[in-house]
Length: 234
Image (cartoon, rainbow, N blue to C red; front, top):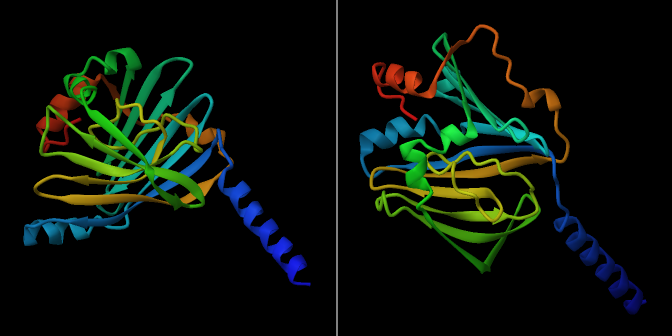
């Protein structure tokens, strides 16, 4: 009887391991701002309002899209990357002002800030493992020679197959896996994003930009406009 129970227990363990090792090539990931702090009390109070903000990522073999809401929904940013056309679209809805920025991925790579992020040093520690949302993950650390005050630590999983990268200022970095949890730290703020939902199916309509009602402009025009409206720069 004991041998039978032991055999059944082993089956459950094996089944658990098989589930954890699954890989997905399309799906949906919801990342949530689970923690944000600052050594400055006034800044910390303002940042606390952002806690719980979510970014939704949809992806498949054709590309990926993300949707991020900020300031209680007053600002919404959607980005779309098409792997076949090599095009990037960003839709920003900011307090009833709607902007559509379109660029080729090649032109986007020429941006000075993007070039800086390409100099990032990425280190992985496969001995430091963790399970997040049932997926096997290992640790990573990113440092920026061009921005030594910025540090990124977190965990990636190779079982979620997408190039989607929502980490502000590091979008040009190709990680070894999907950053399913990460912490960005500067002298003024520390914030942690963690996956709170993973689905193995994707609504393909979420990968297509709905541009009706948006004013189209180049990335440079957008930067200039944002610079004159409080510094919403990219």
